Length: 370
Ligand code: PMP
Image (cartoon, protein in one colour):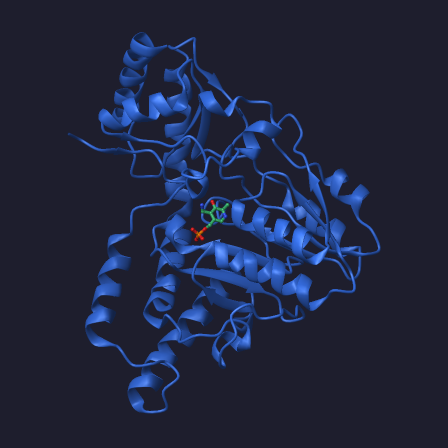
């Protein structure tokens, strides 16, 4: 059976060039990048070259790139690292629909360390209002953490405006989880103190990510170790994985305009075709092009199963909480019943024919179970 992958927000297929380079590196290099003999120095130099290239692509400085195991670790490092380093201020502003890696880090600060967290709710368009950030800033606000693109409904936040507000408030830092925005939206890192993203959402390797940490920001390391990652994140570098991240990011950014054009077309086509099924409702019209969240008359569990049997992979909520019965905070915030919602997400390799097949299957399933 042909498999159709419409869950690109959960993860993406690994880019073939990235994979090829990674395999070649694995075949040839194994030394610890901190070793002082030639084998170690060679890997160290490649690792640092990768850091430099990533920094250049993002227009930040080399020392501001911290390699991590992914966006979850980058989020935890940024949020807990910053707040635990600056415990004289204990108020944080965030949104109610952050990814669980942000949400649970905040909960931990709240429950275990006595932090006071303001969880902002999105407006009817799924967006966090800039004025809500402004109105909630206090003398003791240490951090504002607002994601760029929500991973469940695809709402896009105006972080350019939010960072300006935070900038006007000395002593408050701005962090953004930009995981779902890299390669989709132009990101200006000026006045963003901390930002997290992951390689596997941009056709890179799993277990690979970056925390952009501006030079003036001090963090309490969560993983103690040696000199690696400027002392912020200990442990022998996952050097080969970190080395291919530069290539991953370069390919993503080089192809961005072209890929996004294809995705925009797919989005338009999907929305046209979905009109043929009056029982379907699009939950957020102004979402990012690669993510469409829809409600159907079928329980999402049942529909997911039926689609799976027809070779179609979609999800009903964030994959990180899919086995935990975790509440879909984003859908709840915009008043959608999560039990009937599914998330369809494309990349540039998807096709209109796949959408046609999806629509045919959806119609069949609604007839059968709806
Ligand atoms: N933030 C967002 C917005 C995400 O979508 C994800 C992936 N589900 C993460 C963080 C976590 O990324 P990783 O899997 O690299 O830890």
